Length: 144
Image (cartoon, rainbow, N blue to C red; front, side):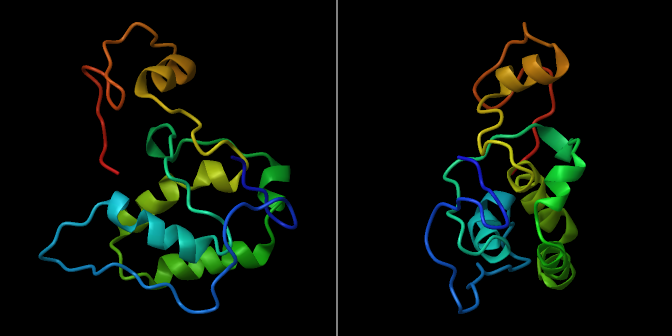
């Protein structure tokens, strides 16, 4: 599924006019990106269906064309920045939300890399690693 900005085809439900209810962010409960992604995505991308699965390479590595950046109105970038400045999430958690959204925002498939072995092979030429679906032996696997 590709998400297209500025008048393109957008999948999913209508944008809500009420504020999104966020999950509790209690210091006593460790929170991971997977726990807050749905709520953050709904707030950041109103009217766009939240993907069930997201697959992307580690560490927000991206190269973006001028056209991809300009495909979103400036108001969206301003809104995303305001969200980052005002969210009660820690920087590492709010950053992780965007880590798993940049490729979607800039027009790539939601499941850009559905498996760790495919990602390592396609991006880094490491095609003979011993891998499971989510991680490869001897490689760092960060939490979502």
